[in-house]
Amino acid sequence: MIQLKNVMKQYDNGVIAIKDLSLTVDAGEFVYLIGSSGAGKSTFIKMLYHELTPSEGTITVGKHDFAKMGPKDVPMFRRELGVVFQDFKLLPRLTVYENVAYAMEVIETPDDEIKPRVLHVLKLVGLEQKLRRFPSELSGGEQQRVAIARAIVNDPQVVIADEPTGNLDPETSEGIMEILERINGDGTTVIMATHNREIVNGHPHRLLEIAGGRLIRDEQGGSYGNEA
Ligand code: ADP
Image (cartoon, rainbow, N blue to C red):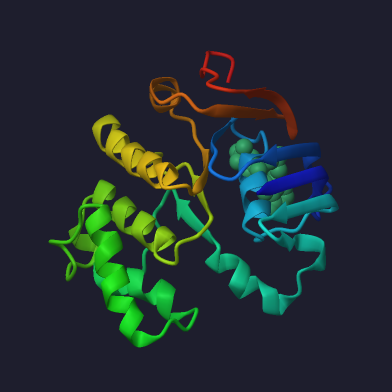
C-alpha cells in the first residue's frame, strides 16, 4: 500500500530531515509514528501526502509512484488519501456540513451524491445534530471530528493524521482514537504521528520511531517508553 525506498529529504537550507528511510505499510494497517521534536515526523508525513517531495529515493502510495506523478495526477491522488491535522484546519466561514461537502465538491462529485454521503460521515463521527454550526461554535474535539469526517468523505484508502490529539484533553483524545480505530476496522490504512503516550500504550498498534531522520524502531504493538 505504502512503500518508501531509500528516501532522503534535504531542505534548501541544507538540513537533512530524513536519511535513507525504507519502509512498507500494508493495506489495512494502523501505524503510529513517534519521535521527539525535530526528529523528522512532519517531514515524513508531508512527503506521504505529497506536500513535500523527497530529494532522493522513491515513495509509492497505492498505485501512485510519486516520481511518475504529474500535476494532473495530484487531485486523484489526494482523493485516495485523507489528512487530519493537529489544528483541524477547518474553513471558518463554512458550517460543519459545508466543510465536509466542500471536500467532495473540489473533486467534482455529482451533486446528488454529496448530501447523503456528507450526512453519513457526520453521523459516523456523531455530529449529525450540529450540521449548521460554524467551527467557532464547536469544542476542539468536535472540530477534530469534523476534520475526520472531511478526511474520510471521499472514502480514501489511507488516512494520515498528524498529531490529531495534540490539542485535546485525554477524554476527548480517547473519543478521537476510537473513531480512527473504527475507520481502520473498515479497512482504511491509518498512519498517525503522535506524542500521546497514553494513547499509544492504551491502543497498541505497529509503532515506528524516528530519531535524527532515521527509523530506529519498528515494532508490532510497541510501547511508548521514556526514551521517545
Ligand atoms: P518533527 O515533526 O519530528 O518535529 P520536522 O520534520 O519538523 O520534525 O523537522 C526535522 C528537521 O528538519 C529539523 O531539524 C527541522 O529544523 C528541519 N526542518 C523542518 N522544516 C524545515 C524547513 N521548511 N526548512 C528547513 N529545515 C526544516
